[in-house]
Image 1 (cartoon, helix red, strand yellow):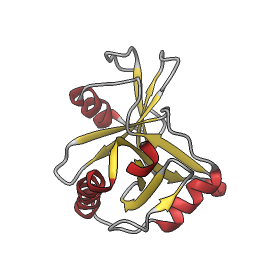
Image 2: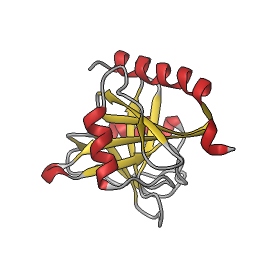
Image 3: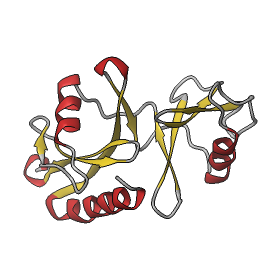
Image 4: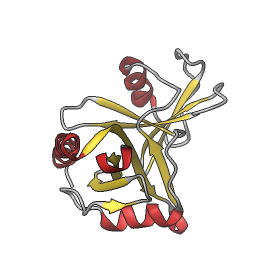
Length: 168
């Protein structure tokens, strides 16, 4: 799937959700790992770098990891992996890694290693299996959360929301 198609899928998702959901929406990115496990990235986290710092670190990324570079969050290094560029925040105690993503226009998006949303291994598997480029079917995760998953160029983007009936 192209970056443009992925961006359109995310925009489509964002446009539809307000009609069926409350304002509480969480986004995740699920990447398959060797051995069949999953790595879950969160849209929001405590470690925030500005776009300029992210782009600088991304440009320095190497397979074994770049030399430490000063950032607003202390020394950071960038690793080029098969699943994208990961920024390691060497002195942070929480949310120590950021995954660099770009939309179809080249805008930088960072995914966070830690966040508040939790998925079971079965839920992650169901979301990955249901993902389609334009969005898979709506899945019920539990009594309060529904989700829809989209194939992107770096993994499966998941939008999770509480339906209005569950928030009253």
